[in-house]
Image 1: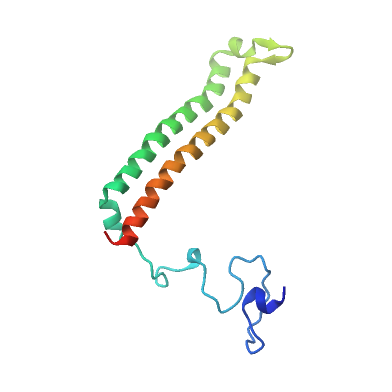
Image 2 (image 1 turned 30 degrees about the horizontal axis):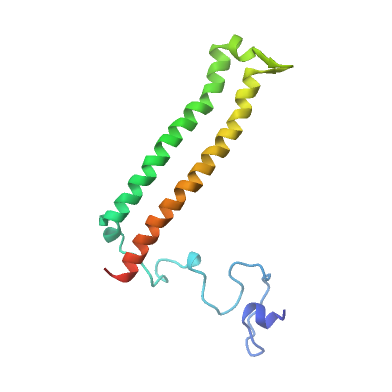
Amino acid sequence: MSQEKRFGTSEADLTASVGAATDVAPLSRANKPAHELTADEDVDVADWERVAAMDEFKELVAAKRKFIIPATVFFIVYYFALPLLVGYAPALMARKVFGVVNVAYLFALSQFFMAWILAALYVRAAGGFDALATRILSKLKGGR
C-alpha cells in the first residue's frame, strides 16, 4: 500500500509523515478520531442534564448498581477471607485435602476461578446495559 493511500496525502502535500500505518490518528490532514477531540472541537455534544433526567438513564444506573455493588462486596469478602482464615483459623487452612495440597492452596486457587466467573457474569449483564444505553442514544439522537 502506498504512502498516499495510507495517510491520505498527495504529491502536493509536503506535510512530513513519520507515523506508522497502525497509528490511531495517522499524520495527515484528515479529521481526528472522536476520542481525540477536545471539548471545543466536538460538535456532537450531549446535554448531560437532559440525559440525567431521562427515565431510561435512571434505569441504566439502577441496573448497574444492582449488579456492581453486590458483586464488589462479594469479591472483597471472598478475597479477604483467605488472609483472615489463614490468620485466625490456621489449623483449618493447613488441613490436607490430597497430597501436599491444603485448604489454603485450594482457596487461593479458587479465587482465580471466582474472578473469571464474576467477569463472565459482568459481560453477560453488560449486554443488558448496552441495550439500555442504545435506547438512550437513539432517543437523544431522535430528538424525542
